[in-house]
Length: 377
Image (cartoon, rainbow, N blue to C red; front, side, top):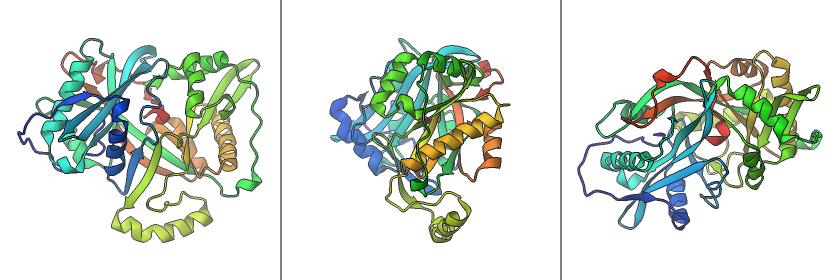
């Protein structure tokens, strides 16, 4: 359960034990309300929402997703989730859990007891069939959450920092009428998987995809013609997809720091001239799509730029304003994109999370670059 929303000082107040339970579709309205009403702080305040159905991705093949909730006085006051799937660790597939979606209702500010019980409850759920590793991400500018989770308080798991992660927003030219969708060749999922597997083995926590899962993603608005590939003979040697998730997962702008709000008109004026990302209006849903399933060898600079350029063309034709990509801070792909495109960046920190007897330690990871799929975080 990533601590991205813990922007208030937490205290060890002892109160009546708040009950936790596994969320079911009957809790859908309450969970979505909690996400909507409790934004993530930072220079840009955001809500990560799941309209119109929080559980739309709960049954994907190869993924075990558990969402827990705390109920106090008939109101859901805390939620968090864990998605377990096969990911590559040290070049081999392992069951790996991503902890995310932690939200604590503003009405329960300072309630360390709720969070501690939530982590205890999650440990109880995982005890019978734990994943090999658990990891999470925390916004780098959320100092309160980081300090709290890194302190190793009684009843809390250990958070072991393993690297910085950079989310890149790449603006799309607004002249959509000048762009057409590039033609996509017929896609062989098995050849695509060979490319993704070969690339994924070089990265920690990169997902291991399956044909069943790729086929199931059609219900989440990822189709075969959303992929762009490059071939060497009959082999796919580079690939990427344009995944627009706004139909089921939204990033909503809820506010800016006073300084950034004051600068916003000038920033947006300059953005029109320089082609840099603008700052959207408060209350608007970010018009972005993810660059997902990206597999390019680090030395193949032409393939990376070529794929991103093709996806920008596709995005322009669909009135998407930003592409969202994610890389470890030390990934050579990030350096190349910075040189080629005007981007806006947001930093987060990746942690291995473990309890005594539950989950492996960061010490077991070798020196491979971090590579979690940003579209799944």
